[in-house]
View 1 (cartoon, each protein chain N blue to C red):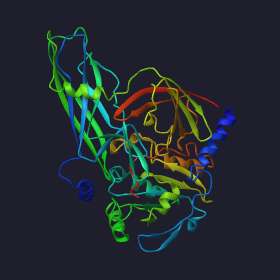
View 2 (cartoon, helix red, strand yellow; view 1 turned 180 degrees about the vertical axis):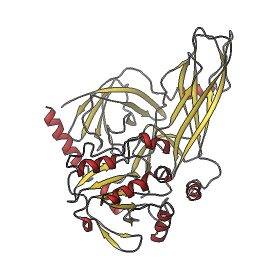
View 3 (cartoon, helix red, strand yellow; view 1 turned 135 degrees about the vertical axis):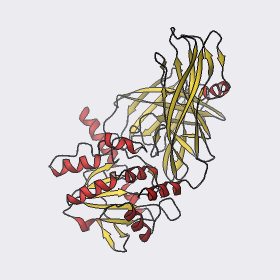
View 4 (cartoon, each protein chain N blue to C red; view 1 turned 30 degrees about the vertical axis):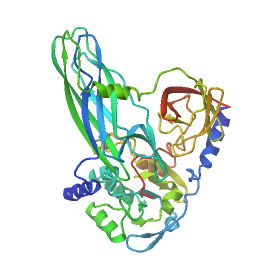
Length: 196
Length: 263
């Protein structure tokens, strides 16, 4: 019985239209803030983190004002992970940036993503069903989705909660790197809704 | 660095006036020792802005209220009025517009000495329209212990929001697993079919917030076919939440806990 329920649950998740974890991450090509085309496939052989970003969202501000996001970006970079920050805010909506503005904001915040990708049509955000900013994904060197969800375990807008929270992205990466299955591959993201 | 961040926050809130203001209020000015009274956080929103229920839905954050009491006093669970649903760009959120009181009942000890006592509250919220602005507030009220109980000027607001609380009227309810989610059944719900019915799950990873809930009605029994949350990792033993049944202008809310059984 239990087994059957598990199968049903797996089927139900598979049918939601979003990419289920442990299957191929949706591929995409977007223009980065410097004007270059960047594809997910460019980074086969490396872990890739996708970070959905709206620099004016208070929950994003929480993770940048505390340096939490930048610290994680640098740590991942040191581990050889490719970090792609994606902005799916539509033109006219909060957090929408052109390439120059994206670079300026990220430089001021001393962020260290590999690239900032511009997704003003929301096409890639919708492929991943990115719901909030931040909403984090981890892709394996083979291009499989390993993690989809919240940045950490305490949904709040208060930076004082960060030291108490478990960082799910880091945890998923460390588990995957040491050959283990990601113990919590899908969590509920928290933050502002993506401004499609 | 700090200047940049301040600028970013200021941009997020172009208006001078914050989208949500907070007051901490008491329904009583004076109470007898050993009796109870109600306190509440009042969150007042500008038009079109909302704050969130305990399950905020697809985005947002739950509103909080934390009350510090004099020694020996106790406080009950926060009472959440029945939430409303907001569809923001294809994502569904649960919360409140205009104004809401989150109430809790305070019990004084029988041994409390006459005098004035201060209760201090801290609150936090995320107020959103299209964009979001987080807020934090504090407030305090003084309540006297004495022989003559006396209501405060805010008591009427408590009465108004008490009507918005889900009733504990016992419904017969159950949830059965289906391929896509659950079939929820509730009865008895009166003689006429409701014009609208919706189940708000208290946990954010039980049900899909955005999927349509398919309702059917027969002989006082309401059936809702709901979709499982994509964040649901295992079938829960029970699904707790609030059923809202609308008939014309009348909105009735029931607090329910549905035991889940396999098909």
